[in-house]
Amino acid sequence: MPKRKPVYKRIILKLSGEVLAGADDVIDPKVTEKIAREVAEIHAMGVQVAVVIGGGNIWRGITSANRGMDRSTADYMGMLATIINGMALQEALEKVGVNTRVQTAIEVKNVAEPFIRRRAVRHLEKGRVVIFVAGTGNPFFSTDTAAALRASEMGAEILLKATKVDGIYDSDPRKNPKAKKFAHISYADALVKRLQVMDSTAFSLCMDNHVPIVVFDMFKPGNLRAVVAGEKIGTLVSA
Image 1 (cartoon, rainbow, N blue to C red):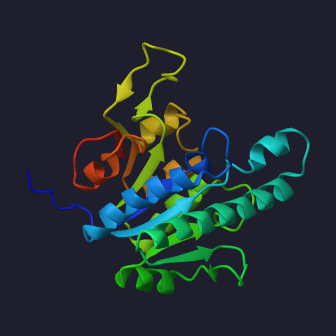
Image 2: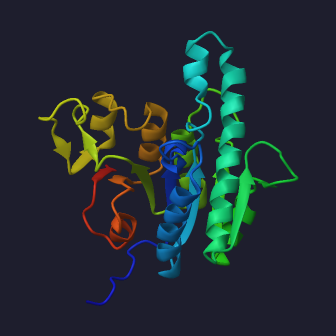
Protein backbone atom coordinates (compact mmCIF):
# COMPACT_ATOMS: atom_id res chain seq x y z
CA MET A 1 0.00 0.00 0.00
CA PRO A 2 1.52 3.38 -0.99
CA LYS A 3 2.17 5.91 1.76
CA ARG A 4 -0.46 8.59 2.06
CA LYS A 5 0.56 12.15 1.34
CA PRO A 6 0.48 14.68 4.18
CA VAL A 7 -2.55 16.95 4.39
CA TYR A 8 -0.62 19.64 6.29
CA LYS A 9 2.31 21.71 5.06
CA ARG A 10 3.36 23.16 8.43
CA ILE A 11 2.65 21.81 11.91
CA ILE A 12 3.51 22.54 15.52
CA LEU A 13 4.13 19.42 17.61
CA LYS A 14 3.73 19.95 21.36
CA LEU A 15 5.70 17.49 23.47
CA SER A 16 5.55 17.41 27.23
CA GLY A 17 8.84 16.94 29.03
CA GLU A 18 7.50 13.72 30.51
CA VAL A 19 7.49 11.99 27.11
CA LEU A 20 11.31 12.09 27.09
CA ALA A 21 11.62 10.26 30.39
CA GLY A 22 12.20 6.54 30.76
CA ALA A 23 11.38 4.34 33.74
CA ASP A 24 14.51 5.39 35.61
CA ASP A 25 15.88 8.38 33.71
CA VAL A 26 14.86 12.03 33.50
CA ILE A 27 15.88 11.92 29.83
CA ASP A 28 16.05 8.45 28.25
CA PRO A 29 18.20 8.41 25.07
CA LYS A 30 16.21 5.46 23.70
CA VAL A 31 12.95 7.38 24.11
CA THR A 32 14.33 10.56 22.53
CA GLU A 33 15.67 8.50 19.62
CA LYS A 34 12.23 6.94 19.08
CA ILE A 35 10.58 10.38 19.05
CA ALA A 36 13.28 11.71 16.72
CA ARG A 37 12.64 8.88 14.24
CA GLU A 38 8.88 9.59 14.29
CA VAL A 39 9.55 13.29 13.61
CA ALA A 40 12.10 12.42 10.92
CA GLU A 41 9.49 10.27 9.19
CA ILE A 42 6.98 13.09 8.79
CA HIS A 43 9.79 15.52 7.94
CA ALA A 44 10.76 13.19 5.07
CA MET A 45 7.17 13.45 3.81
CA GLY A 46 7.81 17.15 3.15
CA VAL A 47 6.07 18.50 6.25
CA GLN A 48 7.56 21.61 7.89
CA VAL A 49 7.87 20.69 11.56
CA ALA A 50 8.33 22.88 14.60
CA VAL A 51 8.37 21.42 18.10
CA VAL A 52 7.48 23.08 21.39
CA ILE A 53 8.78 21.12 24.35
CA GLY A 54 7.95 21.21 28.03
CA GLY A 55 10.16 20.60 31.05
CA GLY A 56 8.00 18.59 33.44
CA ASN A 57 10.36 15.63 33.55
CA ILE A 58 12.96 17.91 35.19
CA TRP A 59 10.98 20.67 36.92
CA ARG A 60 7.36 21.72 37.24
CA GLY A 61 7.01 25.39 38.13
CA ILE A 62 3.37 25.26 39.22
CA THR A 63 4.02 22.32 41.57
CA SER A 64 6.93 24.10 43.23
CA ALA A 65 4.90 27.32 43.50
CA ASN A 66 2.13 25.38 45.24
CA ARG A 67 4.74 24.25 47.78
CA GLY A 68 5.68 27.81 48.68
CA MET A 69 8.26 28.89 46.09
CA ASP A 70 7.79 32.24 44.38
CA ARG A 71 5.79 31.50 41.22
CA SER A 72 7.93 33.61 38.90
CA THR A 73 11.14 31.99 40.12
CA ALA A 74 9.64 28.51 39.79
CA ASP A 75 8.44 29.22 36.25
CA TYR A 76 11.81 30.57 35.12
CA MET A 77 13.43 27.40 36.44
CA GLY A 78 10.92 25.42 34.39
CA MET A 79 11.92 27.41 31.29
CA LEU A 80 15.53 26.40 31.83
CA ALA A 81 14.42 22.77 32.05
CA THR A 82 12.79 23.03 28.62
CA ILE A 83 16.11 24.22 27.17
CA ILE A 84 17.80 21.04 28.44
CA ASN A 85 15.07 18.94 26.84
CA GLY A 86 15.31 20.87 23.58
CA MET A 87 19.03 20.22 23.39
CA ALA A 88 18.45 16.50 24.01
CA LEU A 89 15.87 16.35 21.23
CA GLN A 90 18.13 18.30 18.87
CA GLU A 91 20.93 15.80 19.47
CA ALA A 92 18.59 12.88 18.74
CA LEU A 93 17.22 14.47 15.55
CA GLU A 94 20.65 15.30 14.19
CA LYS A 95 21.77 11.71 14.81
CA VAL A 96 19.01 10.51 12.48
CA GLY A 97 20.00 13.04 9.83
CA VAL A 98 17.56 15.89 10.42
CA ASN A 99 18.95 19.43 10.49
CA THR A 100 17.58 21.39 13.42
CA ARG A 101 17.68 24.76 15.12
CA VAL A 102 16.81 25.44 18.75
CA GLN A 103 15.22 28.83 19.38
CA THR A 104 14.74 30.09 22.91
CA ALA A 105 12.44 32.73 24.36
CA ILE A 106 15.04 33.63 27.00
CA GLU A 107 18.58 34.38 25.90
CA VAL A 108 21.10 31.55 26.24
CA LYS A 109 23.25 32.51 23.28
CA ASN A 110 25.94 29.88 23.71
CA VAL A 111 23.50 27.01 23.18
CA ALA A 112 20.50 28.31 21.22
CA GLU A 113 19.33 31.09 18.92
CA PRO A 114 17.00 33.76 20.29
CA PHE A 115 13.44 33.37 19.05
CA ILE A 116 12.97 35.50 15.93
CA ARG A 117 9.79 34.74 14.05
CA ARG A 118 11.08 35.51 10.54
CA ARG A 119 14.23 33.49 11.12
CA ALA A 120 12.18 30.56 12.42
CA VAL A 121 9.96 30.65 9.33
CA ARG A 122 13.03 30.73 7.12
CA HIS A 123 14.47 27.67 8.88
CA LEU A 124 11.23 25.81 8.25
CA GLU A 125 11.24 26.83 4.59
CA LYS A 126 14.81 25.50 4.29
CA GLY A 127 13.74 22.11 5.63
CA ARG A 128 15.03 22.39 9.18
CA VAL A 129 13.10 21.27 12.22
CA VAL A 130 12.80 24.16 14.68
CA ILE A 131 12.62 23.37 18.40
CA PHE A 132 11.10 26.15 20.50
CA VAL A 133 12.18 26.21 24.14
CA ALA A 134 11.74 28.39 27.24
CA GLY A 135 7.99 28.66 26.72
CA THR A 136 6.85 32.21 26.00
CA GLY A 137 9.73 33.64 28.02
CA ASN A 138 7.28 34.81 30.69
CA PRO A 139 6.17 33.29 34.00
CA PHE A 140 2.52 32.30 34.52
CA PHE A 141 2.26 30.89 30.98
CA SER A 142 2.42 27.15 30.29
CA THR A 143 4.27 25.50 27.42
CA ASP A 144 0.83 24.59 26.02
CA THR A 145 0.17 28.31 25.73
CA ALA A 146 3.62 28.71 24.16
CA ALA A 147 2.67 26.06 21.59
CA ALA A 148 -0.58 27.89 20.78
CA LEU A 149 1.33 31.16 20.45
CA ARG A 150 4.02 29.71 18.19
CA ALA A 151 1.41 27.95 16.06
CA SER A 152 -0.31 31.29 15.53
CA GLU A 153 2.95 33.14 14.81
CA MET A 154 4.27 30.49 12.42
CA GLY A 155 1.02 30.20 10.49
CA ALA A 156 0.83 26.50 11.32
CA GLU A 157 -2.17 24.67 9.95
CA ILE A 158 -2.57 22.53 13.05
CA LEU A 159 -1.26 22.07 16.58
CA LEU A 160 -0.57 18.43 17.47
CA LYS A 161 -0.63 17.81 21.21
CA ALA A 162 1.23 14.55 21.94
CA THR A 163 0.11 12.74 25.11
CA LYS A 164 0.11 9.28 26.66
CA VAL A 165 -3.63 8.80 26.09
CA ASP A 166 -5.49 8.46 22.79
CA GLY A 167 -7.52 11.66 22.95
CA ILE A 168 -9.68 13.82 25.19
CA TYR A 169 -12.13 12.18 27.61
CA ASP A 170 -14.89 13.59 29.79
CA SER A 171 -12.99 12.22 32.82
CA ASP A 172 -9.68 10.54 33.50
CA PRO A 173 -9.79 7.19 31.63
CA ARG A 174 -7.09 5.81 33.94
CA LYS A 175 -9.42 6.27 36.91
CA ASN A 176 -12.81 5.87 35.25
CA PRO A 177 -13.22 2.86 32.91
CA LYS A 178 -16.52 4.36 31.68
CA ALA A 179 -14.93 7.64 30.61
CA LYS A 180 -16.24 8.87 27.26
CA LYS A 181 -13.80 9.80 24.51
CA PHE A 182 -14.56 12.76 22.24
CA ALA A 183 -13.82 12.33 18.53
CA HIS A 184 -14.39 16.06 18.11
CA ILE A 185 -15.04 18.89 20.53
CA SER A 186 -15.35 22.62 20.02
CA TYR A 187 -13.02 25.14 21.63
CA ALA A 188 -15.97 26.57 23.56
CA ASP A 189 -16.99 23.18 24.97
CA ALA A 190 -13.39 22.40 25.91
CA LEU A 191 -13.30 25.67 27.85
CA VAL A 192 -16.71 25.22 29.49
CA LYS A 193 -15.94 21.64 30.52
CA ARG A 194 -12.53 22.78 31.83
CA LEU A 195 -10.81 19.77 30.28
CA GLN A 196 -7.36 19.39 31.76
CA VAL A 197 -5.53 18.24 28.63
CA MET A 198 -4.56 21.87 27.90
CA ASP A 199 -4.98 25.05 29.89
CA SER A 200 -7.71 27.56 29.09
CA THR A 201 -5.28 30.20 27.78
CA ALA A 202 -3.97 27.77 25.14
CA PHE A 203 -7.49 26.79 24.06
CA SER A 204 -8.55 30.45 23.88
CA LEU A 205 -5.52 31.47 21.85
CA CYS A 206 -6.12 28.68 19.33
CA MET A 207 -9.80 29.58 19.13
CA ASP A 208 -9.08 33.27 18.53
CA ASN A 209 -6.54 32.47 15.80
CA HIS A 210 -8.39 29.56 14.19
CA VAL A 211 -5.71 26.95 14.91
CA PRO A 212 -7.22 23.45 15.19
CA ILE A 213 -5.76 21.05 17.75
CA VAL A 214 -5.41 17.28 17.60
CA VAL A 215 -4.76 15.50 20.90
CA PHE A 216 -3.36 12.02 20.27
CA ASP A 217 -1.29 9.17 21.69
CA MET A 218 2.33 9.73 20.66
CA PHE A 219 3.40 6.37 22.04
CA LYS A 220 1.52 4.23 19.55
CA PRO A 221 3.91 3.65 16.61
CA GLY A 222 2.76 5.33 13.40
CA ASN A 223 0.22 7.64 15.05
CA LEU A 224 2.13 10.83 14.24
CA ARG A 225 2.39 9.86 10.57
CA ALA A 226 -1.30 8.91 10.53
CA VAL A 227 -2.39 12.27 11.98
CA VAL A 228 -0.28 14.17 9.45
CA ALA A 229 -1.82 12.06 6.68
CA GLY A 230 -5.30 13.15 7.79
CA GLU A 231 -6.46 9.98 9.51
CA LYS A 232 -8.96 10.40 12.34
CA ILE A 233 -6.63 9.75 15.23
CA GLY A 234 -7.25 11.09 18.74
CA THR A 235 -9.54 14.07 19.36
CA LEU A 236 -9.94 17.10 17.13
CA VAL A 237 -10.57 20.47 18.81
CA SER A 238 -11.87 23.11 16.40
CA ALA A 239 -14.62 25.65 15.87
